[in-house]
Image (tube, rainbow, N blue to C red; front, side, top):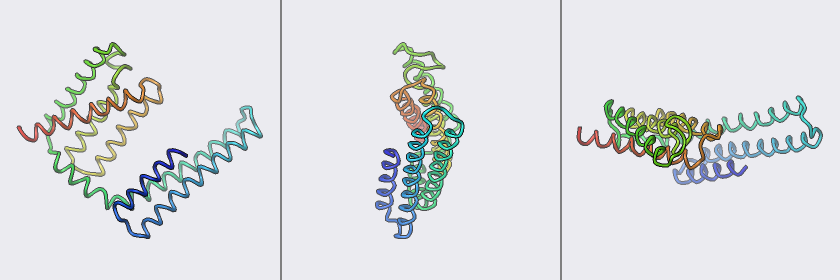
Length: 209
């Protein structure tokens, strides 16, 4: 619920800042309220199931999974609604930023990814944590994933492709947390290293090459 409320507040603030139409704001609000309601129903179902069947039971699992699935479907619907409404306000501005920063550079992309890998290995060696391909500080998977996503964003200069690439990089990073291989700090710093180095290298290639 905390995550849902934070996301709802951010979306509402973005809608107000972007000055969406009253109808669009109403649709966003209804989508958000629907997600919150399904989350509350999910919590209620889980509480009742735990009360009736405190021990593991296949039917209890089905009830909980179905309730959680309803939340997921509602969240997907809200995400689609949010994209359809906010994309026309956000993507043009995001595209202009990418156009200012980016330029197509195959060599710059390869150089930036290699530099990211070298920096990650050096940091792991200096901190004495993990191995070059597993664990340690920072997360190499997050660094490389965000390096590639940043390179794709700046080379294509397409807002939708950029967002999809960054989403994939976020999923890769999140998997490192789920597998308990890295801490949140490792992942965030790795992502910053990957995006930061790639942006600097590609800007340098744009200016000097």
